[in-house]
Image (cartoon, rainbow, N blue to C red; front, side, top):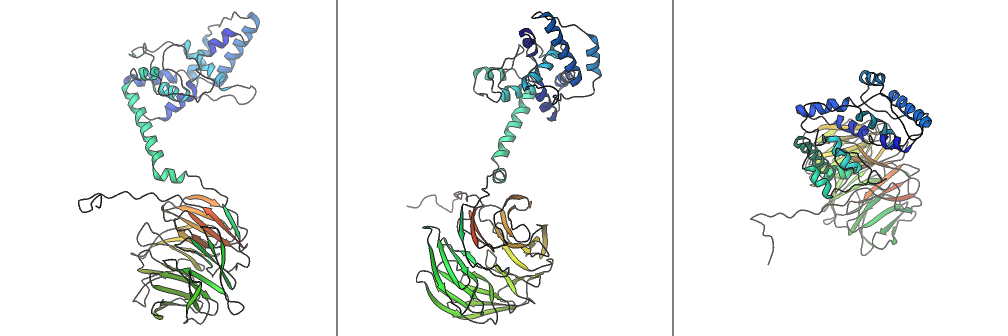
Length: 520
């Protein structure tokens, strides 16, 4: 193709995708804009007509050399007016075309068309949304003359050039206002916290993996917990080990030998005492600094598979189907709940420490209050054992629970109204649930059949990410004190650390007449 042909074809380089962009913006146009829109629609044509015209130009250029005469044929114009398509679809087969070559065909059409009458802006260039789009995206100046590429990089642009500032003064005010509103909306949407959280990058590979030999593969046990002092405790058969996040050191904390097996453990809120439930039904309380046992609590006749500590009250759930409340300071029992018909495998205190949720192997979820022997609420929607229980720190009275293999659902309840709010089928056994401390999201760990870890958004219940890596049921879950890291334990005898949640934003200072801004 000759040089003159290329110059003639380069005039229509940008209108295709821009017209599609403009069509998607539903704007109530003025009379002048309506005329401009009709003028734009008349420019489009079928792909077959464009290819025929291209072949005609190429044949003439090969016969006559550099001197090309484009015949004014009325037949293609009639076909263009009768075309029903409103979009230009580039040819994908038969010819190899670049982006610039595809745009060049439509440039020839506009040269042969006369401008519409009655347009006040025809001498100024008929600046429209597509022209603004070309200026900001493709870096092209807004003018009525021939458009030339400033750079081969079509995504290179500079919004601070004096030329563009002068051109913006001549733009149709209604079009410019619409464009500015779209830009402002986009910036507000991208700065929104929900948008940033949903688009944050979560590493799907654990940043640390620790071996945990003899970690029991038992759904009804709770064998790991992370203290407020950033120390992780792990129970391996009859031994308990501590891992410090500060120095990455592992310490053997206690050993029951052949006399007993650890079935559950939990740190107190201060992080200086560790309660350990055993297979014999005893509860041992150890001092973390002295690494010495302080007392032994009795009361259960079977293994203690779940523990929950709130303030100075320690409650324990056992295979004997009872829940006992203890006060370690006074070394006495302060209460007892009986309602489950099978083993109690899940216990969780509410954030305000006023309600206790318990899940059992009888597929029931109960909510208790201290001082009352009758449950405040009974939920029986699950079809399998309820071990996974979590309270939301972001919404008062919101309780979530997960069912075992035969159920596979996560359900949400309002304990104030005792109504079920929502539920979702996860497709796998739900082993653990935990709400994030920093954002309104929660994490669930699963067993059969995918052994996955899933981060969810609440209340939309949309998946943020799915973490894979364990080759066995992910039975145990704990969270770091800052709420950013979770650790999971599975029957594959490994502990995996994941960066699952973002950092907590700094609290905004409160300035009132009752609270001085500075203290002398």
